[in-house]
Length: 300
Image (tube, rainbow, N blue to C red; front, side, top):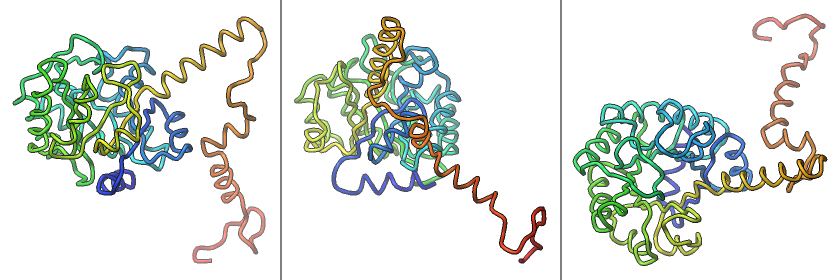
């Protein structure tokens, strides 16, 4: 599993892995084309692509299938949202197996009650710590690839406080998680404190307009975070671009000029047209010395 094998190495190196959020293969390809080292499959974006808000309405199979399509579309490690594991520790075992089978490099699982909601919305609830740790232990043991990473996410900050969020992050690491994700620290001081208080690699969720203060990637790296995800970056950008073009079409009655105009051929090149053309041409080439309609004998 090429994607999974590269992510542990990245985390052992200096610096921070930046993974913008993709909700489909188009956005995943654009992230790869832009030169980022990893892709984050956003759960909120996946739900939105199905026509739902991030309220835990997407099923495990829908999320795993989307993660698998994205992983197949790029040669980058894919970190994927797995919500709450979609049930108890038994559901967690199946979730890990399905994500591993689809070529995903890592997943994160959270301690919210089911159904969950976006970590930057109000009125969340979390499960007892023992229930969360049972799922982390199940996830760690269920993986059939030792390079597949389990990221433990806690939403406890908004429900029972920052200190409890840190306690849960450390307990999850002791239970077998490879990295910790303290969701939505509410002040810059809290954000800066997390990597020093948590005894393992930490992931930072950068959500513009969310509950956490805005922070640059350079500042997050200096704080000690090893992974930064930007789930809504392309989703919000796409919504804005699409609404702008649709409004212009309604007003002008003429096809608007896109922000990044390109030919039809250039569009297809982004998604591998040159490689597919080369493959077709290879199969159509006739081996030298072979008459039309003749197939060379075995061993020739």
